[in-house]
Length: 102
Image (cartoon, rainbow, N blue to C red; front, side):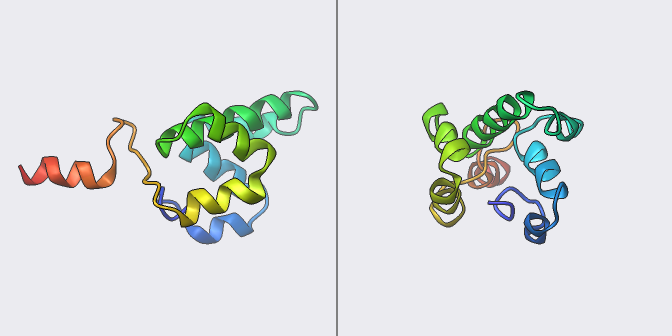
C-alpha cells in the first residue's frame, strides 16, 4: 500500500513513522500523529485515517471501516489487489499519464 501511494515501503517497519506516512497517504496533516497518543481520540483518528486511505484508493467508507477494524485482512487486499492510489485531484496514476499524453 505504501509503495502504491509513492511512499517508502520500508516506512511500515518504523514505529510512529508508519502512522505519519498513513497521514500523508490519507491527505491529513502530520500532526495527527500526536493525536494518536490521546485516549479515545486515537480511535476516532484511526477510523478517520482508515476511511481517508480507502477513499484515496477508490474504495468506500465501508472498506475504510474494514481497514480500521479488520486491518489484517483489508490492508493486504488493498496492497496486493488491483486498487490504484488516486492523486489529490482524484485521478489515478494511469489516468494522469493518459491526460498528459493527449
